[in-house]
Length: 250
Image (cartoon, rainbow, N blue to C red; front, side, top):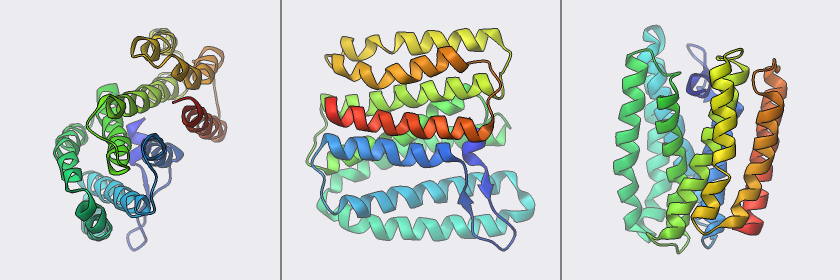
């Protein structure tokens, strides 16, 4: 899945932008979840712009590690995106200096992604895990910025986002790279059943609801041939129902 997220629509002289729907969902849904779990404010927009451009910068950089012929071009875009991200982050960081603490796990997790890219194993499920943790940090940061704290709610914002998108990673594996692999199909179905119990165990029983549709989707379609366009539509619909239901019941 991370391979798809890292693919960039780029030419030697063109703009470098991600073109996979999964990446856009992962950058926006956890952030929106965290913002709604706290207190939304206008400066969340600046924080999101910073988060978005850090994403663009990091993935342009990862692509530069793989594409030697376009390395200078990709690094230039990575640097430009990074500058925009830092500029957008200035005011939110002034308001909430503790946001800087998220830089530590972000860099450490990104190093893991870099390691997988260098070893040509970026499609490994472990790499997916670390990448999804990075995206989930965006939700935690949005929650903290919206008058939240370093508390159980922040932990749940991070955990729920992580659980949802790991389920997406398992499902996508079964319809593309691992289609026909019965062990992967069993693992995906088992995962989607088990995560239903996590919200209950954590004291948030109603948060089981956003995981029901992904469970049904996985049992119906895991291992079957699904066109990329249809898969994209399913994931967009899943992300929308996840954020809407979570907003209502969290």
